[in-house]
Structures are given as structure tokens and as C-alpha cells.
Length: 126
Image (cartoon, rainbow, N blue to C red; front, side):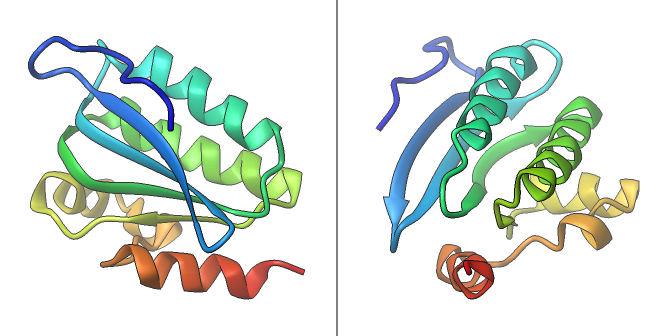
């Protein structure tokens, strides 16, 4: 499990763990201009290592800015280029509303639960 990216209230925390051989990246807090660089560096770095699959769990994100949406779309595209199955989870309004407004929900297709997302990417592992 990785250490938090920040410890200030309102900032973002990123932790990783494995669930059924899938790398799960749990993001919590705010994903905005102030927190995006460390999140992007960590997420892209993890995909670069070419794990079997990646799920970005956004269930505990309290704010998702447009730059966070761009990062998720870029991370998914990069994962696809690397041949790494990629999925997201989101069931909270703080994430689903901005994704829907931007139309990114049609591309990212967030899953309501972690088990659903893990099942989806595991099915793609060759």
C-alpha cells in the first residue's frame, strides 16, 4: 500500500492494493488542480509497470474537477495502449455528476462497485 500523497484536510489521498490479482488505486478527497500532479505521476507510473489490470476506485472522492476527468481519460487511453485492462468505480454524486456533464461517463463507464470493476478487467486478462 502506498503512502498518502498529502495530509492536509481537503487534499487527495492515493492508496494501492491488489484485489484478485488486479491493482486497485483508491483515490479519496479532492481531485483538482492542486492535487493533480502527484496523482497523475503515480497513476501513470503504476500503469507503466504493466500490471495485469488496473481499477481506479473513486468511491471516496469528494470533488472531481475537469482536470481530474482529463487525467482519467488519459490514463485509460494510456492503459489501453499498454495492453492493460482499465476500469473505474464511482457511485457518488461528487464523481458521477461531473463525469456525466462532461460526457466522460460514456467513455469511462464507471462501475458501481469494486467487485464489478474487478470482474470486468479480469475478464479482459489474456
